[in-house]
Image 1 (cartoon, helix red, strand yellow):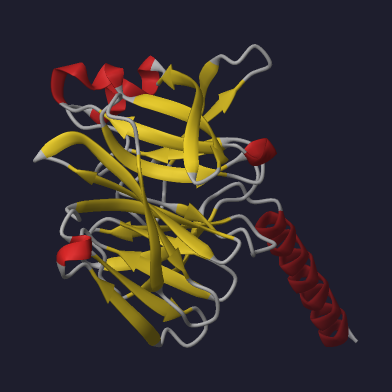
Image 2 (image 1 turned 180 degrees about the vertical axis):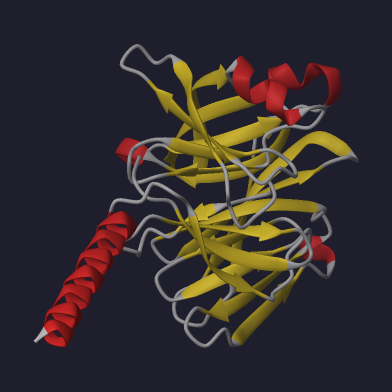
Length: 272
């Protein structure tokens, strides 16, 4: 009988522990790296429901998410693409991949948005949209709240406080500037002499941004009065700066990023 009671007590103890662990996992606020993929990219990653895209200066590789099978490679070659110098980031919207491109450091203000048809297994360049020579070197592009487009123009060195976030309307194959902001001082100081390399709007309505090479993301928001504010810093991430992308097909908040020329990662960021 005593042995039976001890067994029952021990079983109850195990159930309690398992229950507590399950609750801790469910309510955890700790970021968790879910996957590290041995695919090299020098600038960033984009992602959609079934594929991800390894973005480098003048090339893009398309992979299937589940199998990690490489499906297509695009490289800038020939007269039509001779302007390609420095692709930086990408976002997939309605079957098209939009990439931020600049000719940094040759011509810092020569920027374009490059667009590919990525429906199915395709990776076909469709068009180049030149941007106004105005703010600096384009580092990232994303479509955010209420259907507006957002781009970041980097300025480096002692003047990196002039790095701009710009809001656009996309109409008739033209990006029409609406307004712009400089970044909060808390973020600028974290860049050192570099600037903002990546940015992606989260499902929580906040903007997640990265610097050049730190394993952290700065979370920002625009308040009701259109003030651009620092919210918090996210750490324990599977990437070091460069361009990032939220997986908007995932039920969980999964942020993709890269370790430059080494790997691509998926990190779960629980709601905070």
